[in-house]
Image 1 (cartoon, rainbow, N blue to C red):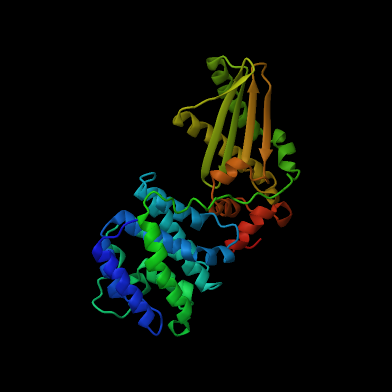
Image 2: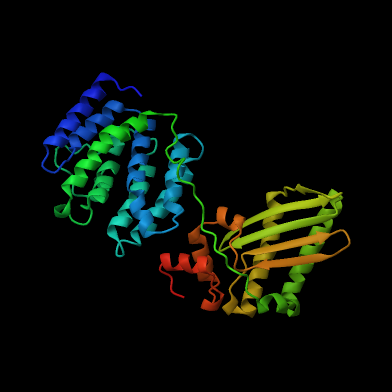
Length: 368
């Protein structure tokens, strides 16, 4: 890592400023000059990501098994690398900004630790003048909307986010020394992945699948049986066209979101199969109607998350339902808030709420 002379000079000036400050602070004007001198959006974006990672443990201590905030930090880095769109990044940032606000009354420090990640996402691909205020003073701005990501992170780290009079000067000095030394050095090491040490895994709980009356009684529901009969005709036609031995349509439906894995067997070998988006949407409407009808029959049991249908060339049509187990596809494809939304649409009694879902509902402050 190499700095130019101006950056080196500003770092030395900043370290001296911190050491001579009674509060261990790095002024707004010095931070502004430093970012303006760097003047490279990719590096500035990485600095903001590192600030988010610096205080992320505070959020994770409060919100155990978090996947969304660390996921946003990871997506921000992917955006800087050209691996995702700005539209998708900002959509997630906007959602998680509101999400973090919902926990302000529970733990303001943890909530702002999460919002540092949101600030970092907004910083992505921005120049220095967009990241740090041009407020013409060495004094910090009191409006949180005008705070730069590093300053917000410092307040989270030093305890001042609750009350500026409560700032731990030792922690403040520690943060800003880290910022000028380790943070900048890492940010300039362009080949180093910043989030590689954070493996995002949604927690898997050993939740046994509970018996459902819905599964046994749907055969007595004329509308459900009519829907399945129509699906059977569709699958029979597809199986005939591909000359396969069996077709497997594994459908996942959580709130308003759908996902499907389609495959078929032919001569003992399983193959992935890609249906057109129009066919998938058509089939998904049948599945959503089935979920709704079955739920109406026994509302206390909730709605299924997965419906796996297997059709073989002999005419056997097997249906398997999953209400409780967050299998791999449900972990990787659907976010926690989507399960919370599903619960609002298909509430279930406490008896039918697995531990992993109860954990989500508690975090989202949804009573059950």
